[in-house]
Image 1 (tube, rainbow, N blue to C red):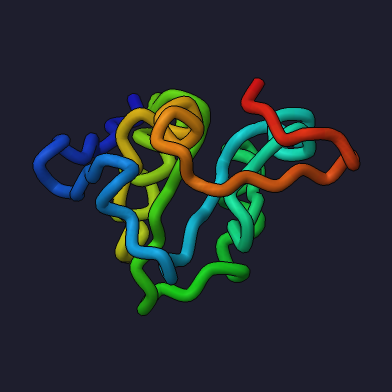
Image 2: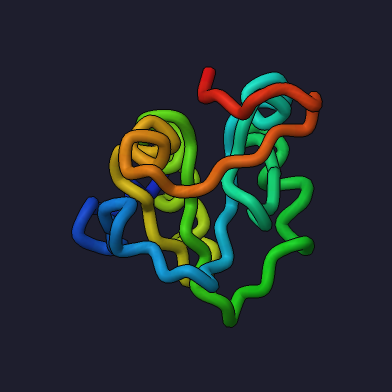
Length: 116
């Protein structure tokens, strides 16, 4: 039997979109098609299922603000990253809230950015 340790919610921080610093290192864990349609300018894109294989792309000494569409995937990513010793902070409300808050978006498809 495999026993997996679960990280309690209190073991990592969650912040609203408006509390993400302007110069924050943002990690977007959404799927490729979501990223292409619209994302935070300057964010790093690593889909959730690729995170373990691409962990070396992240700086363990940097606060990472982890974001997805609504907060579920970023919650899981933050939980896992924290368990690996990274300083990860979940962005509550995700890109839906990012858009509603009027924060800047860019797209990779030449169209007006939108959140899928």
